[in-house]
Amino acid sequence: MPRALHTAATGMHAQQLKIDAIANNLANVNTTGFKRTRVEFQDLLYQNIRVSGVNSSSETEVPSGLQIGHGTRAVSTERNFSTGDLVNTENQLDLAIEGSGLFQVRMPGGEIAYTRAGNFKLDSRGQLCTGDGYPLEPAIIVPEDAVGVTVGSDGLVTATPASRETPIELGKIELANIVNTGAFEAMGRNLYRITGDPGAIKVSNPGYDGFGTIAQGFLESSNVRVVEEMIQMIAGQRAYEASSKIIKASDQMLEETNRLR
Image: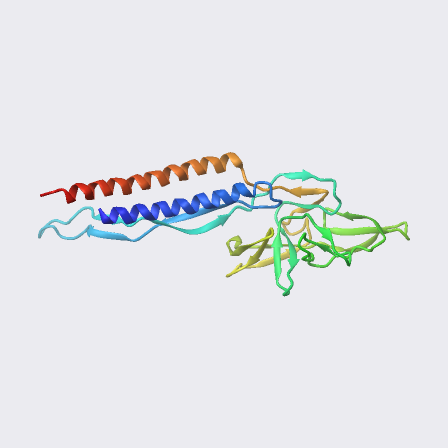
């Protein structure tokens, strides 16, 4: 019975982590470029009370063993990078990726971070950057007298200065991708950084080498599906409730044992 108490406690803790992940998904249902996560579990060690294959007599052996498990634990959070719906904003600095790939952002220490959120702004130097001021990599600088900015599906950025009638090229947006998306660690602010072994890091222009294209004037919404999250929340809540009832049943059995004379 003490084993059942500890085993049920691991189940309650695991389901609490699942509910925490669901809560974060639902909280970010309107966050641009957010990718939902799910918690993955694995069972714990097993105690072999009776081992299969041991001799039960000089001529026979035990056909099946007896194992008692010690519960479960959460081992990882898997991030789903499926594309969210595209929303038309009609803002020339809003960019969405139609397909695979991530924007590259240079952090203050020189580290490259990655994001699917394309709601960019212009800083005091006219540099294309995130809402927190982190510049896009490679850098795109828009002239102060630019009448308008155009971003092609292949990432080519052009602008027409007030002093000219023809547009000028400002640069090309490059997208990145890695083989092992599990190496992405969320930093907050819609940014990811690479930890561990990401495998091959692939960088190319939009529309080439399997990368998606750029849609100007659109933003990618979160890929959270509220109905699916609610179903998972109900399942997690019921599993948590079942584990708590195991603890209650074990407690009642211990109570009965203490009453024996």
